[in-house]
Amino acid sequence: MKTLGIIPSRYASTRFPAKPLADIAGKSMLQRVWEQCALSKELDALFVATDDQRIFDHVLSFGGKVLMTSEAHQSGSDRCGEVLDQLEQKGHSFDIIVNIQGDEPMLNPTQIDDLIRFLGDRPKADLASQFKRTNDLSFGEDPNCVKVVTALNSKALYFSRSAVPYFRNETNAGIKKHIGLYAYKTEALKRICKLSPSLLEKTESLEQLRWLENDLSIFMQETEFENKGVDTPEDLKALVKLLNDRSIEGEG
Image 1 (tube, rainbow, N blue to C red):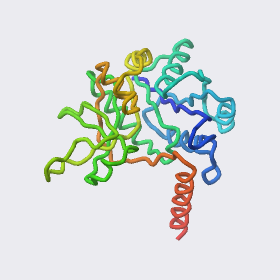
Image 2: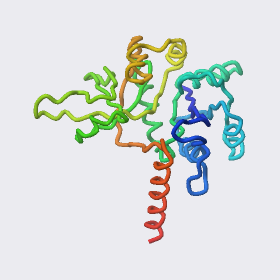
Image 3: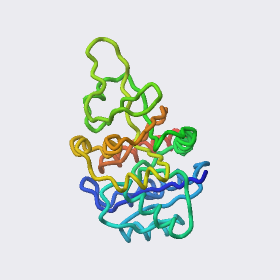
């Protein structure tokens, strides 16, 4: 089983332009993500996928591998699909492709390995992702926290920005917070890239609902890891402070 890790990376961002190149204690955010991914034991190949020459050149500068992709892509999945196509045209083949968020510099490589093994053990799964369980119901009211509801066999039933499930009585089944790391089987990714945006996807602004509406099977793995993404300059300041605090504690 051959696996390919892809880090989609765009320069343009409404809330945080040039985010991939933002400095975090002497290294760019993108380089930190790359270095964490490079520690994975299950990835056979790793590429950054970008549509910007500045990011392309930066990846080469720190010794990473990068491919230029179209500016027209609307999602990270589409960008991953083009990378897969480029590599297949060069004679390479992969069984599993992992779509890795480029704004999570604290990503634990064990997370990637766990997800790859999880998907590889499920022949009926088209793709897999992860969730972290919490009993803090306040997350249910946060639209930036995506929730997932699963079947007993761990298959995803629905994703939402709303509070699901709705707790009508005192029973607290907990909330499953979706962790945005995806592993696709090759044929599933190719199929995804041919799908048109769906009604539920547009309603909640969640790409994975398009996949569910088109009957792809998404199996969810529970994890204890919860990566803090960097969406704004304020998030970056908080992360730098965290790293500095850890550095001081280590010196002590």
